[in-house]
Image 1 (cartoon, rainbow, N blue to C red):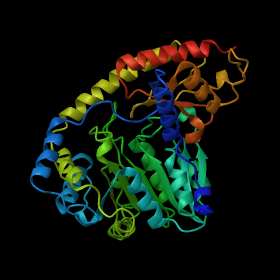
Image 2 (tube, rainbow, N blue to C red):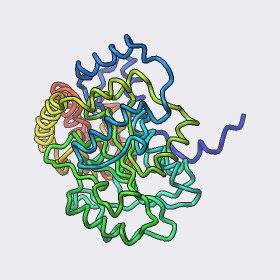
Image 3 (tube, rainbow, N blue to C red):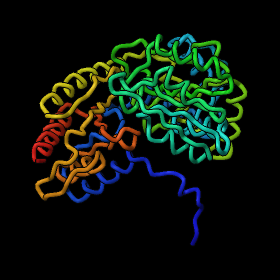
Length: 397
């Protein structure tokens, strides 16, 4: 049997791979502390769940428009105006089964075979693989720890070529939690204005998980408005990961192209989840703010716990719910069994198999000297997980 060569273009997401390995060990009765997945440990707020129940009773059980219910797309427009000062119409919104599909729609609509796509590293694992699926060429631009892992205007300009079609980034960033300030965006915009053929994809899924604020979107710049594809969704800010609701906002031309592509893959997303999303987007953000307050306390705790681990160097993340420490201090050290730790991949496997803590190698995000640890878990599990990490690393020599 010969399967499609398409499968050779991309890799399985390392985040999902580690989650799968953790589940396999857990099924064998091993107590795995999960610090790998980016999923709030909070339940969906009650008023959103009630809206879904009402939608079932009201018989919202039929096919919906591919781009989503019109009143949901209007709710997205209302949110973007209320929170971000951005003006969009429902025709410029496409609702998808999660932000990941929104990103795939945008890349497939914009990128042709051989087009270059600039991606600052570290980056979310799926960006590069979706570009490869589209036949594009990822151009990775390494950012500096000292600069909060953010691309500079000079770096951006140096890497734009005649083949550049798209720039992809996230703010707040997964995995680093870095946030681009208005001043930093200003400098990037000054470069983009010189290259009107380049599209910009801005992934803002962690917008609400921001401890320092305010959130600044690159979509606010009128000079770029027709070229920016804004990605967002409800998974992180509303604790709605399993509901699979993401959306994009773009120029009418790009939005219609994304709708056309989605029509051949999934059509519309779940009707019940869409009705619940309307309530989520238009209701009080009190549950979200309470969740963010809890994450902020956990961030403080995690930063203190890392200070107790020799050689673990980390910026305090201003947003999201990850820490991304540099752990190259441990490269070259040996496990009690005599195995040498050569890189972050091997360190993560050591932590999984010996400390029984799941993490994600920084190599998956384009930064091989780091690992990603999530604090979207209970205080008890975070404390337990970091103690096990500390003990397992102390065993290396």
